[in-house]
Length: 42
Image: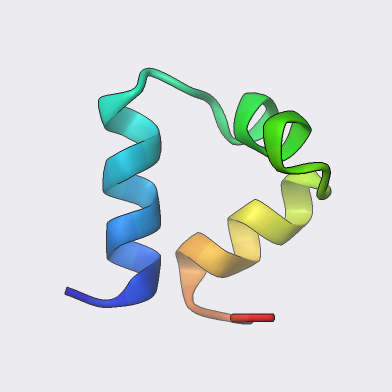
């Protein structure tokens, strides 16, 4: 399982939107989207 797959699975298992997770991690929603899409890991 890749980092992007794991992140998305964990987010969904906690019933969080990308926006909600972004707020909790203090990052942008676009960052979450890129991480889940495997575009960026930093």
